[in-house]
Amino acid sequence: MSLVLSSSGFSATTIKLNSGLTLIHQRTPALPVATVDVWVKAGAIAEIDDWAGTAHFLEHLIFKGTDRLAPGEFDAAIEYCGGVTNAATSYDYAHYFLTTASQHLEDTLPYLAELLLNAAIPDAEFDRERDVVLEEIRQAYDNPDWIAFQALNGLVYPQHPYGRPILGVEDTLMARSSTDLRCFHRAHYQPENMTVVLVGDLSESHAIDLIDRSFSTFPSRTPCPQMSPEAEPPITDIRREELYLPRLEQARLMMGWMGPGVDSPIRSLDEQLQAAYGLDVLSVLLAEGRMSRLVHELREDRSLVQAVSSGFSLQRESGLFTISAWLDAENLERVEAIICDRLSELAAVPVSEAELTRCKRLLCNDYAFSTETPSQLAGLYGYYNTIAQPDIATTYPQRIQALQPDDLQHLASHYLSPYHYAVTVVRPLV
Image (cartoon, rainbow, N blue to C red; front, side, top):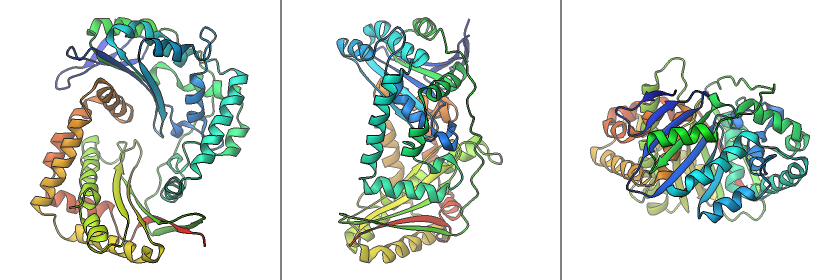
């Protein structure tokens, strides 16, 4: 037996299977394509400090076969059916997805389930893949924007796992063994931590049967060091770091503010989401398109920057609002001061209806464009279920449309202080 947890007001159905696994299913009969996206609450936030990078390293090793599946056999099976597959690791999750013609899902999904539940992590593949990950880290350090972002994360979250690189660092990866990776896998890749999202031309009964059969035997649990992150205290001053890099043509300015997450001991999920989506609107207002405030003033009017952007990332325990610019080093202080002035204005003066209407239109259109395919829907449902609950995935446009100028003024005042933020500056080394 399985338990249907939700179905009304949400186009997908959430089902708790007997194993403890969560299945989210939506039938799309008009499209002969199916996507299965498996989300695991085993991202970088699950690592203790000495194991930093383990979750991402495990993502690589998952595809290196099992006792019944040789390395490369999964890829060959997917390619034979014309399907595509990939994976990603973030702070709050790791996820693995497969897209194929609906008629081939019965033949291909068992391969993915076998890899996820019974990863062998053989010693020879462990050593070889660690070299791949180490090279990925070395390449990342050739990217000035990655360097600036990691430095900013460390300033915003000096105590929390969100402040560590998801890739890890060379020392922690070299200290890990294949036994450690098996331990992490068997501790976290368990049914209560996993959600399988299936969107495609399959009936609900067929979907339940297929997932039940494919995800039937989970790994035996083993003890593993557990991370219990504490809430990061708010930023009460200006935290600053300056870096100097060779061969850098344009300086980088990256500013960050701690925003709402979905877990809060003092605010409801509804309040946290409304604040998060309001910060999405403020991000568009500030730096999305030529008509946005910072792009118009700093790039189009004054020619002080080559590019300026803004964004808000919603995470489980704490969101991150950023403003970034590429510019000549001589303009760094001036541009930072202008940005702080504009944030003060946001907190003091309500935005106009015309500006707000533009922001709402851009965000709602972007949401519509991102929910057109089974793979996009599966990713949306899996992400929201992993950090909160799946049914809120479809409420985004309504929440955006409900925001008013005084809401944005309050959010700017509360979250985007020109006196309390982190800033990373990267200058050319001359």
